[in-house]
Image (cartoon, rainbow, N blue to C red; front, side, top):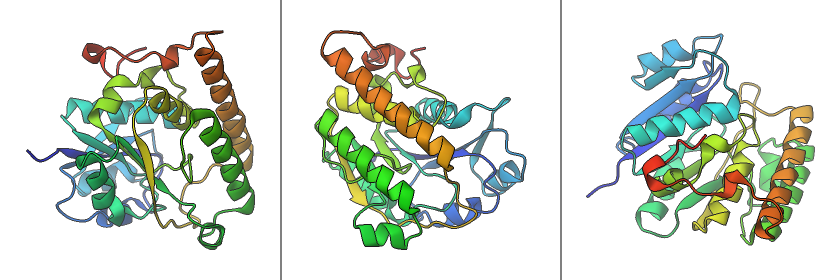
Length: 255
């Protein structure tokens, strides 16, 4: 039986890029696109509905992590077998979706990341700021060493998950901020899900959303704190509720 594939889009003021992002997705690859709007002040919701997307409007600003929580809740409720997060800012190349989905469908991995960092030349050539490239490489190195994984990039927003991952990871215990992504990576690693990545071309331009320098520093420090909590948990020195899996009957809703 074919897998039900759902794309989720955590959106905030994406009117300039949403339609291009959706049109970039190959036809016939996904069964449903769910957009969760985090109180945009532009025409994001109007465009989403015109494009026929399942559109969820949040009543109050939830943050990047809070938006993802609602995205995954909605995808699980809609019966997804595979969930792919695609940012609606047209930064990542959505044409790679069939390949990312295929790795999961074929049982190669449970989680797959779209990596923007294949070579330094390509990453910087795409417009990635130098400070962001250096921070990305250093943090990824530390995460690989601590978690025992081998990813070329741990900080991409282009990710695909098997349903069981979202059912077991207690993501509602995570931050509502950008560090949500780092927490999620640590959780899937701690639960021993199979993680891989594929190279994906990306685009940096004015309309594409980016974390500013101050927020990037806060994100980096937050990531290091998450890794420290993971090491303490593994050593039995301090239990971390984020690393205790959700029971299957309460999948995705542990608060």
